[in-house]
Length: 143
Image 1 (cartoon, rainbow, N blue to C red):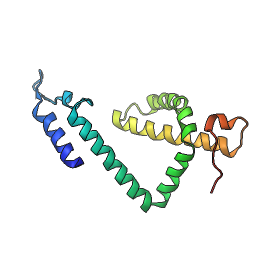
Image 2 (cartoon, rainbow, N blue to C red):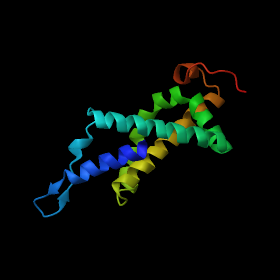
Image 3 (tube, helix red, strand yellow):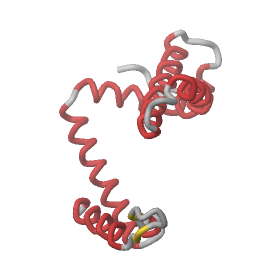
Image 4 (cartoon, helix red, strand yellow):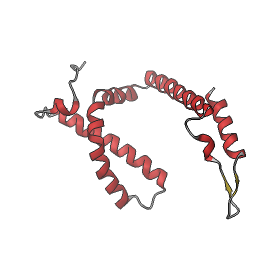
């Protein structure tokens, strides 16, 4: 279903485009607004596809399973701290990664922010700092 929906949306974006002022072809992204019935179906099928792929990967790969369980354990703390971490990661990315394409900068910034947030929160928990339950929430005992 996802591939059919993707093909249909991609076809509509390309065929409803027009030549721009510089002679280049401009795609019509107005078709992909999220409130259209086609996009609701596409987004739903995309989410179901990602869910299925994640579940099958989760069952097959032990390191991925451990990493996702770790993120699940500390997800509240990662959520609380990620804005501060993202602020500093953006400063570093602007200073050192400006020569990279924007999408690669975004991917690296996302990865660094996620890993640093997880590292800080897991360190706070392992050091058993006072008041950590307010930052990371009440955690179940380790298994």
